[in-house]
Length: 486
Image (cartoon, rainbow, N blue to C red; front, side):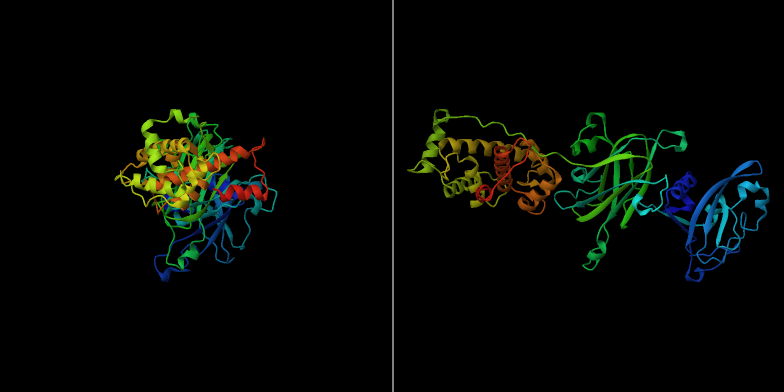
C-alpha cells in the first residue's frame, strides 16, 4: 500500500514490474466526508471509488519521454477528461504506430500522465500473486517461498528488538539472494524482494476478546563466519552486535504487513515478531523475489555432546562420601527412589538461593533409571557418586543462567543453559520442553535437573539403538521397555 503524497521515487518502476508479473493494482481518491462519497471531480474522477491500474507505458512526446499510466473505471462510463484522456490533443503528437491500440473510446479505460496520477489519486494498493495463481505462461513471475510458524510464550515469542534478552528466540528464516535484478534501480547492484508477514486466524480469536497483534519483521545480513552453515539459530550476542539492514516500515496491528526491499546479493535472515514478548499467534511469512532465491527456516540441528562417563571404582570414592552414603543407604547399601527423593529434598533445604517445589518421585525415578547399570532399580555407591557429580555440575550451570539471582531460570535462557550442558536443541524441542518443565516463563531447579536427566537418558537410549543410517527400529516390546522406564 502506498500513500501517493509520500510515494517512493521509484514507484513507476514498481508499478511496471507489478503489471508485468500479473499483480492486481487498485487506486482511489480519499474522501473528507460522507458527502464526498462517489462525488465526481471537475475532470470526471470519482472520489471514494475503486479504480484499477491496468498498464504503464513510456511514449515519445514532443522530443522527450512521457510516462503514462492506464486506469480503468469498473463502471465503464465516467472517464478522466484531462490530459491524455481519449479525446485529448496530446495524442496528436504521438507516432501513429506507437499510439496504435492505446486509445479505445468510451470503454471505461483511460490514460493519464504519471505526474497527474500522483496529484489526483490518494492511494495505490498492490496485491502480488504467487506463481500458482497465474494461469498464463508469462515469463515474468514472482519466485515465492512460504513459511508457516508460530510465536509461543516462553519459547518462540521474543518480541521486537526493544527486548534484546528475548528477541533472538523468535523464529528465523534465511533467504539467499543469488541473482541481481535485470534493471537495478539507482544503477546499484541489488536484488528486489517482497516480504509479507500475516498473522493467522485472528478473526476466530476476536470472538474471545482478542484483537490483532502488533507485528513486524527485521532483516539481517549473515556475516561471513556464519555463511554456509546449514543448521543455525542466531543467538543473543549476534543481535546485540549487529544492526538490521532492512525492516518493515512499522510495527502495526494489521492482519498483514509487507515491505519491498532492495539488497545486494548475499545471505539474509528475516526475523518476524510481535511488538511485545509473550504474545502467542500463528503466522505465515512469504518472500517474493524477482529472480531465483534459495530460502529455508533456520534452526539448530539436534546434537548432544555426551562425554563418556568416567570409569570409577569404589576405591576412587572419597572416604567422607562413603561414610555419608553408608548412613543414607542403610543396611542394603543401596539407595532406592524413595530414599533418593528424601536425600535430594533435604539437600535442597540448605540452598536458600534456589526456588523449588522439591524433587518428585518421577524425577528421582528418572535419575535412577539413567544410572542404574545392573537393573536393580537402586543406586549403589559408584552410581550415586556419578549422579552426585552430575547434579553438582548442573547446579553450576543453573546458577550461571539465573541472571537475576531469583532462584529460577527464564525459559528463554534455558535454551542457552542446555547448550552449556552439551545439548543443542531446535525450536520445536525447546517448545515441548518449556511446555513440560516451565511454570509460565520460569524454570526452577528441580525441573531443570529433571529435564537434563530425561534428555540425557533418551539420547543415550537412541545412540545405543541407532543403526548405520541414523534411525532406530523398535518392536513393541522394545518400545514399551524404553518408554515405561523413562
